[in-house]
Image (cartoon, rainbow, N blue to C red):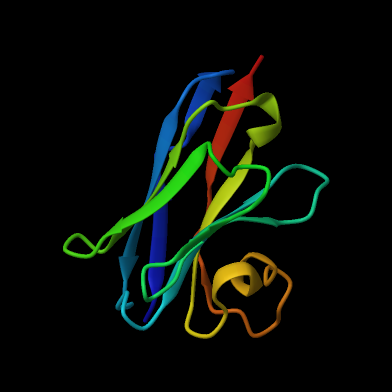
Length: 128
């Protein structure tokens, strides 16, 4: 059974940094594409970053150059390093895993009925 548990959210001032973690169980990174989504109040869930099973990374336009996705296979943990945070980055951040959607398709798959697995989310709040 796949389980994804996020941590590391919090409140930070504009320009600050946070690192989110996602502890994954029931997945093997060689078989799953892993990534992050976010959802702000009143907005649709948005793809942030994905790391494919072959290690390739893809980022949403709004975070490119500021966020970095990585994973530690030994710890079965996915990370999202967020730098130069802006108030518009404020959202609930979700870890996600899927066997089939990869790259840009992964980032667009939030509404797909056949999408794999989601964590419960961790809140990030950026104040100006």
